Length: 80
Image (cartoon, rainbow, N blue to C red; front, top):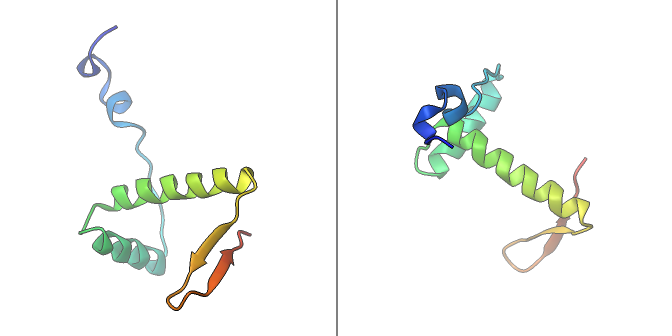
């Protein structure tokens, strides 16, 4: 088995995709990037996918996703 450098660049770096985003969606991504210390939009996408995957896995297990607001009120996140 060869080293990672022996693989084609696309295999090493993953697939490249292109997205068309509304101005609002792009602004949301840029806002999220700023919250993480100005990471790249690609990194925002990777983190969002990881979060979505985790939440869906928990939902599939029957878990409830809860948010506790300041003051102690607890609400369940309902996925559509």
